[in-house]
Image (cartoon, rainbow, N blue to C red; front, side, top):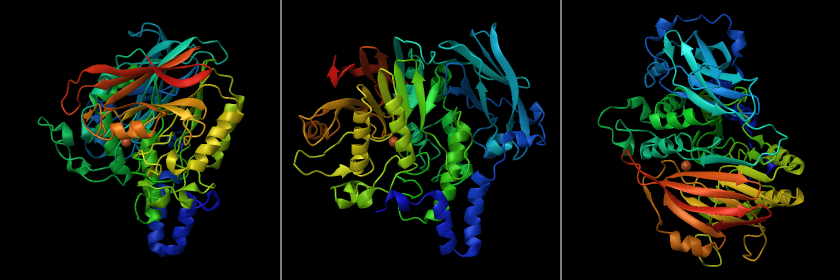
Length: 545
Ligand SMILES: [Fe+2]
């Protein structure tokens, strides 16, 4: 058990490693982390990088599609990554050099009215990723964008800027998603999400999984292709993580969802390793090499997402951030993975103990907690929406008085949850909506002021979204359905199928539509709505409709 003061941050782990490891081994670890993270140069320092002729690419470099993200009222980040042969080492590009990439963003799909255009260089150092912050745009408008390299033009993406910050905005619709283990099935849910009329998509973690993927793509059971052997082990190096993103981004359904909507992404654990906590790996591995592994994973994440954040510096990447959707909603996108104390009681489902109840324990870290509290205090939005990773509400797995709880979720950090609820209360937040992933099932939950007392006040709602693909086809009522719903009276809905969730906000209510697909281990699954719930502004609590 560690208190926040002695929580092992990556930088401290490196210092400690110096004392424990022999000098040569320490230098190997630290120089790996440094090469990955500390030592990166800004692209502007790459003026001398040789510019490759487009023909050196040897084929269409736009095999990973396009994406946009982190829109503001006047800008949006446009992303692509050049990868002529995505599943080969280096994605088919040389280990040094740069490529000139043109971009344009237009008011129409046919690019007759181009709003902005320019060119930038994709550098080998960042795996030929492109992040363009296209600014000078109009608020609340749909745009189309594309990239060009030599004779090749990318697919066209559609995006949308946010409404003006201070303006009264009547409504928005967005989707949230999580957990997309490639080897567990097809991204059919994304094919359907691409057709939804939403302003944005929030991804709340597990964009990739680190486990090895066999030649047939696991439960996808490919017969028309053979995946490279380099995918068939757990990701630990920068090359491993980069190849994993190439595989995922090459998926046509995922590409369709990215091309259709701007995304706001945050991560959970599997972008690095299952159930890691800050600088501490899942099991009893040596923490010093884990720092280098985490730096590699964070860097590959940044390279592959439409993020405005600067590239990772040091071993960290600040991902929590705030988004204002007019006066209607404030989104506080959290990172509950990078700064947390280690899971108590050995992780997994355990009975609470003084260790898990320790008031010093943190899930968000002190800095993020302060940032969150300050943001809520200043908020004037109708809705305070919190996209985040792990289940916030209590989940007992037995109707008995005493129950084991998930040590990886907020249940394993009860003091941190109490501080969160106090912050919400003190800030006078009336309409709290938590958006959660992680568990590969859907729930609708009332957030109680005291989960131990069913009669305590409901202070908000938590919509837990199911997975895109993790855990395969799933079933409507998993085996523990009756127990879980009986043991947790604040749980109003539980469904174990794959899909995504659409949330519609207006000034009077928030509505969640839980979309599910019929199956994912074969292509072609059909879409339906499992259930819909609303919570009224000023009167929190989920009600079926
Ligand atoms: Fe997951």
